[in-house]
Image 1 (cartoon, helix red, strand yellow):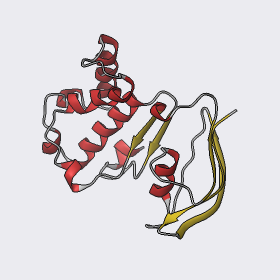
Image 2: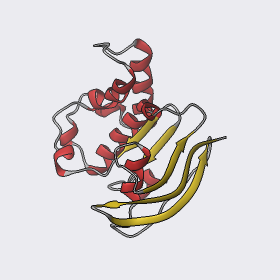
Image 3: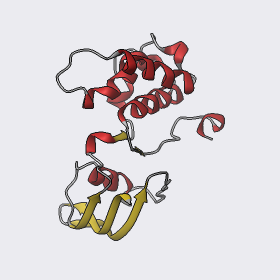
Image 4: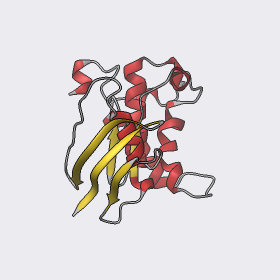
Length: 170
């Protein structure tokens, strides 16, 4: 059963379509790579899947019990995001916030999962460093670790290899 099914989507801004009549499905275990020129609607599509952008036409159907808070997302970084004054550990752990409700602390298992994600991505030694002091590639790894903490079923990556060296992006 597909987790996401997009049917005859038309998306755009102020009545002008940037993409139209797009249909596809994504099931558990699938990889889908969307390639296109700047301004062709790739980021707009991701925002629509996340419920952050309304559709001009068509449908996005979430199946298999998929909830929006089960989707991890790494957007393109803005200059303000690159200058965020928090530690790497704080940013990675913040991936759990969307599912923690009003709980003002992280559970032990969440802390362990965040640490494991940082280790897996080779950034564990940076845990206490300030995010804004990192290189672009290191920042991208931090955001990936955060998104992995946030996701339960699907991970959306917008420009995922931006700032990464060839070894890190493979």
